Image (cartoon, rainbow over all chains, first blue to last red; front, side):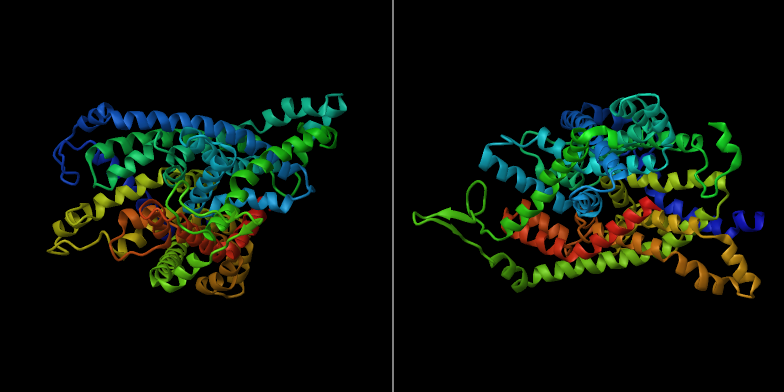
Length: 285
Length: 295
């Protein structure tokens, strides 16, 4: 067994190099955010000075609040839209326009961001001149944009979890006289709750992260954190941005770890979805 | 779920469908429409396709933007530059990603979730910040040059930043997880017995790999390649932050047309051609993602 599954030197090497490549820049960024020197790449001792500077930066603070506001609203909208979309795709095998729906759910995951951003902006501009909506661009238009691609990610998670969902529970509830909506609300949705929580968290971090789409659809009134970071990064590397980036990474790491932990925990609880049915499990339920 | 009723079904399907229609599909059509308009000074800064000159509704369609794309070789070079950079990044991601995915798929079962999580984590972690992190490493007086000089490998700093090398590195770094995940999907589903059978029949490891493992992981290779290639072609942040004056990628050209030149119709035409060029890969990618879901 160990010969086949054990980590041979070659595989360990591939993993070390691979993860070293993926994580070294992140680790260095965080380490140098504690650098006392203003010169970003010259180490001059430990200091938390730049975290203080960042906290006193009015522009970054305002942008962080805008980003949080957008991310909370966008993730919540994405959760509602993505859950009903994922449910529809998983449970309704036939309805008019299903292939188009499937395309519209998948395509935003791969279409370049510049195109999503440009196309949404043009929609908002056309809407404003034709029907007077939206009156101005800012927090609301960014929220709509982020909710749209967030919903696509949520639907992927919800579909995946519904595929492994034990439908006999739903059937049992129906047999016992529960109405279909009651079953949906009290059996199905709680059953896929890890996907819902994970989906919300992922939509939240995606929204928090997005630079390109937000830059297109925003107006003069709203600047998100990535936009503020981007404009200062264009001027060069600064220790203040290092501090901000490290804080940002910490928040995202915690949220994403939480999302994955929830998904993994659910997976362990679920009966083994191996294709060969195992006898003892039949008697357990 | 038949009992959920027509109205319930209509709501569950209709709400997200209408939303995606309005905020994803319709906007793509508007891009097409505005690519046929002409740039104008005003708000919005383009001419209307439909107008009434007193003798009924007229339609004015202009192909001038597309003619410009063909005539000014800046655009053609930017499309080809983006395609070239993205294709090379895809190949490099495959080259580096394959051993990693293979090692994860063959790692002890208890480790696999953790390793996969470690691959996924950077993917969810701010793209902008991860690209930004490379600037401090690649700068002329940056960490990598310091290291190389300290070890005596070089005497003068290498030009690592603001050129084709840094763009390529940024692309590979950013999109590597997109390649590893589908590869892992294929490789972990592969039946180990097949490789043992090949070995029993006298195949050396290399031959067993070429004859069994590689062909069976083709779906993962295809899916991963598409997931890297499509977004990388339209990439803006990487060429903007890590690229130099000679870096020409279409995503950046689109951004500049829009934000710097304020020429919305040309930006739209650039987008239309990009979507048209990516349409077939996108449809394939959708198919692969769909299969993965149902598998």
